[in-house]
Amino acid sequence: MNEIPLGFALMLLVWVAATAIAISPKTRTYAFASWVCAAVLAALLYPNFFLGILPMKYGVFLTLLLQIAMFGMGATLTIADFVRVLKMPIAVLVGFVLQFSVMPFLGWSISLALGLPPELMLGMVLLGASPGGISSNVITYLARGNVALSVTMTACSTLAAPIMTPLMVYLYAGQSVDVDYQGMFRSILTTVVAPVVVGIAVNWVLVKAKVNASLAEKILAATSMIAICMICGLIAANSQALILQVGFVLMIGVTVHNLLGYLLGYWGSRLCGLAEQDCRTVAIEVGLQNGGMAASLATEVLKKDAAAIAPALFAPVMNVSGSILAAIWSRQIPKSDQIPNRMPTG
Image (tube, helix red, strand yellow):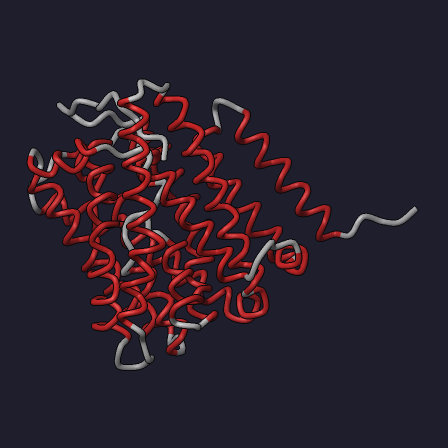
């Protein structure tokens, strides 16, 4: 009888563990993080399987997955989420400034400290210059944060990305690597902003048609999560050799990047006088990045596969750390803060 390969046995064990985590009510907080980790591990162990079953070119399929994920996020948003900026302008402004100042700077400075080559530094800066992560709204809810602020910040940073992301990349990486800024602008519009806008329009139509919006949101949110897992897996499979070569050093870099994002996001908000609930929200929004967008820009626009490695590693790191942070904060009720009732599912 043939022996089961060690790699296959390890992958099977991780998938079984991820399924068990998702089923158990006590550990369900970590479900998404466990699925992302399982997808990345499977891709690293069997990259040829992942890349061999693609229905189209790698870059095109990656972009399509990102559009699906962003559409799912947009479908959980309403016009009221943008109007909310007028009701909490200080918190949104503080979060926006921290998002596009702290994270790009950290990506650049950590790269210098680790002595990363230009293309890996570009990936760290791209990651830092990306808008908030798609899963931040759910993690904010679990962490007893301000969900309304989280939704608003994610929406605002996403719509501002066509301007802010190329600008930050120009400031921190433009001197060492050739960057197609116009291409980045067009790509973010078509792969990120347009799907979000379409998703918002679909949400509006469903509400007007009195369709079960809650069920539709859950389906679209689940679709987004599956797309994110596939994105992480594809990037890991396509960059397996480079990840095995520089993965340890880069893993240190993205972990420090992520944790400092939480820390500086939280205390930056505290220094600006925001309430505890809002500080938690800003910390999560700053610490979680849209790695899928960064990876798509690296491979499709900038044509530098090495720059996609940092986003590939950041995704499992941020989802694990975010889930742990949410579990810790969920046990600490913010003083004199009202927990919002609405939980976006994307």
